[in-house]
Amino acid sequence: MKKRTTLTMLSFLTLVCILVSSLISCKSKTETPPQTTEGSTSDAVTEEKEEIIDLISGGVCNFKIVRPASSLPDYIFNAFGDIRDAVKKHTGITLDISYEDDGGNEIIVGNTGREVLKELSSKYRLKDCFVGVYKNQLIIYGASETSLKKAVTQFEKMLAEKAKESKTDIKFSSLENYEYLSTSYVVESFSIANTPLSEYCIVYSPDGRYSEELLALRLKSKLEKSVGFPINVYTENKVDKNAKKIIIGNTSYSSDVSVGEYEFGLDVKAGDLRLYADSIEGYYSLFDYLASNQLTQKDVVLEEGLTVTKSVDTNKISTKINKLGDVRVLINNILGNCDNNKYPVIYRTRSVTELIASYAPDVVGLQECSPTSRSCNIVEIFKTYGYEEVSVNPTNSKKSNYTPLFYNPKTVKVIEGGYVYYNGTLNDGGSKSITWAVFEVLSSGKRFAVCSTHFFYQSADLGGDAGRVENAKTLVKTVKDIVAKYNVPVIAGGDLNTRTTTSAFNELTSNGLVNIQPIAKKAANSATHHTYPEFHADLGYYSTYVPPTANVYASKAIDHALVYNKGSLTFELFDIVTENFALMSSDHCPLVIDFTF
Image 1 (cartoon, helix red, strand yellow):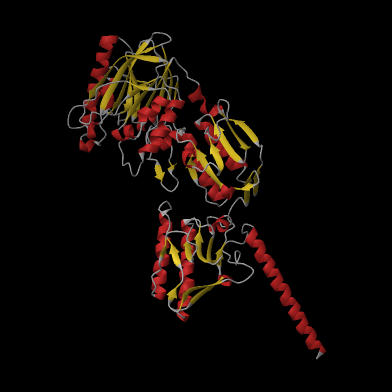
Image 2 (spheres, rainbow, N blue to C red):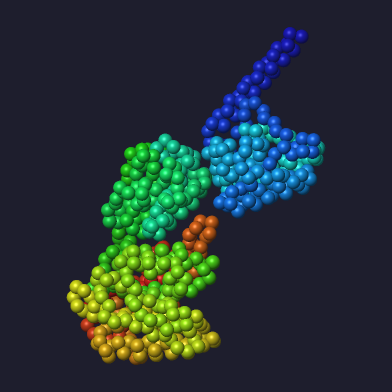
C-alpha cells in the first residue's frame, strides 16, 4: 500500500513538472519570434489561461467578419470571401460584415490593419500562418498569399469538424489554435539600431533615378526571402515621417548623404538605414554587398553609427567610363512598339534613359520611340540628363517620330535636321523612318551627321526583304543628299532588321556605306538582339532577361552602324552593350560607336 502511494505521488509530481514546463514554453514563444521546425504546429500565441469564444450560440452568430480595405492585395479579399463561403456552407449562416473597428467581436482574415494583429505580424513570417483565438477575436492570419491560403484551408477544416457535432453551437478554444512555423530562412534575426527589421519600410525618391527604385524593389524581395517578414516600399512623399526607414539614395530624409564617383555606401543614422551610390553599377554593387556580406549571417545587427563605403570594380565598365574618341554615338531600339500590358513601357523608359546617359554619348539615335514611350515621359527624362531632341516634322499619320535623335548641347550643336518617312505599304504602324541631323563639335568645330533609322521588320514571305531593300535605297539617297550639301561623314544606323549577308545590307554597302563593326579598332562580336525581357508584376520590375548569343555578329546581328564619306575618321570602338540595365530595357542591345576625326 505504501509503495502504491509513492508511485502515485511520483506521477503527480511528474505531471506538475510537465504542466509548468509547458506553460513556461508557451509564454516564451509568445514573447519571441517562432523558431520551431518546418511544418510544425503549436500554441505559440495562446494565453496561459484558456480563451473560449462562442462563434455561434443558439443558431446566432456573435461575430462579424472584417472586410479588407481597398488598398490591400486581392488575395486578402479572396480569403475574406472564402471564409464567408465556408461559414455559409457548414452552418447556413451568412456572416455580417464589419467595416470599421468598433470594438465588437470580429473574425479577422489576413493583415487587415487591426491593432490586435500587431503582435502577431511581428512574429509570423511570410511562410507562417495562425488560426485560432487571440485576445477575444477569431483570427485567420498569413502574411503572404500562400500562407493565408493555408490558414483559410485549416480554418475550414476545423469548422467542418465542429459543425458535424452542432451547427447551432460552435465554440473555438485557444487550446485548439493552429500554427504553422517555417525555419527555412537564412537570417533568423535582423535588427537596425536595436529595432527589428519587421518594423521597417523601404523608401526612395519619386524623382530619383530608376536604379534607386530598382534597388528598393530588389532589396524588398531579397529581405523577404532571407528574413521572412513582409517589407513595404514607399516613395518618400507617401511614407509616414515617423516610420522606421531603409532609405535609398538622396531623399528629404537623407539629404546629407554623399558618395564619390563609382562608390557606394551605407550608414545607420537616427535609427534609419541609408543606402546610396552614384551610378547604376554602384547600386548593383551595393545590392551584391548586402546579399553576400549581411544576408548570409544567422543574426544581422546594424548598430547606430555604422558607416561603410566601398568602390565599384571599374575594370568591368571601362568602356562606359572611358570614351575612346572625339565623339560618341549611341544607337538603340527601345521596344516602344509592344503590348504595354505584357511589357510595361513606363519602367523601361526610366531604365533606358539612365542607361544611355551613363555612357555619356554626344548623340543618341532611337528606334521604336512610340507615342507610348513619349507619353511615359522619355523626352522629359532625357532632359533631366541634359539631352535635347533634334526638332523635326514627322509626316506619318500619327505625326509622331519613332526614330528620334537626341544630343548633348554641352558638346555638340545642331546645324540642320530632317525627317524622311519610308513611303509605301510596307511600313508597320507608320514607325519606319529616318531622322537625320548635321552636328558640329563645340570644342573643335568639326562636323558630322547621324541618321537614326528602322527598317521594315516582317519575314521574307510577307514581303520583308523587298521592303527592306526599298528602305536601304531611301537611306542611301538620304546620306548622299546630306553629303552633297555639307560634305561631312555620315553615321547611319539602327535596327535594320537584316543581317550582313542579305540583299538589303548589300544595297547599302554596294552604294558606298561601310559597316563600322569590322573596321573598328575595338569591336564587340555578339548578336545585337535577344529574347524579350519578362516583367514580373509581383516583384514590380523586369527580373528575367538573357544576353544575346556571343561571337555571331556577322551571321546574326540585325542592328548595325555604317559610315558614308568616311574620309579621315578613325573608329576606335564598336560596342554592343549587354549589361543588366540594357537587357531589361529592350530586346535590342545599344550600340556604342566612338570615333576620332
